[in-house]
Figure 1 (cartoon, rainbow, N blue to C red):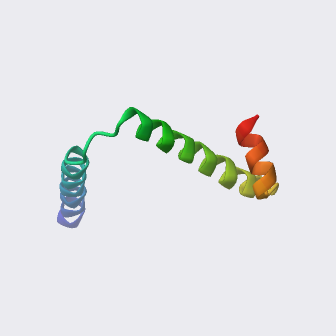
Figure 2: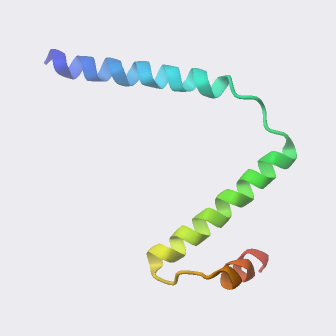
Length: 67
C-alpha cells in the first residue's frame, strides 16, 4: 500500500517540477506562435497520412499544406 502512495507522490513531484520548468520558459512572440502552430499542423498531417497508409511525399504534402 505504501508503494502505491510513493508512486503518487513521485507523480505529483514530477508534475510540479514540470510546471515550474514550463513557467520559466520565455513568452513566444506572435510570429513564433504561428510558426509553431504551422509546424505542428504539418507534423500531424504527415504522421496521420503515414498511419492511414497514404504516406504523403514532399510534393503531395506541399499541395495539402497550400490547399
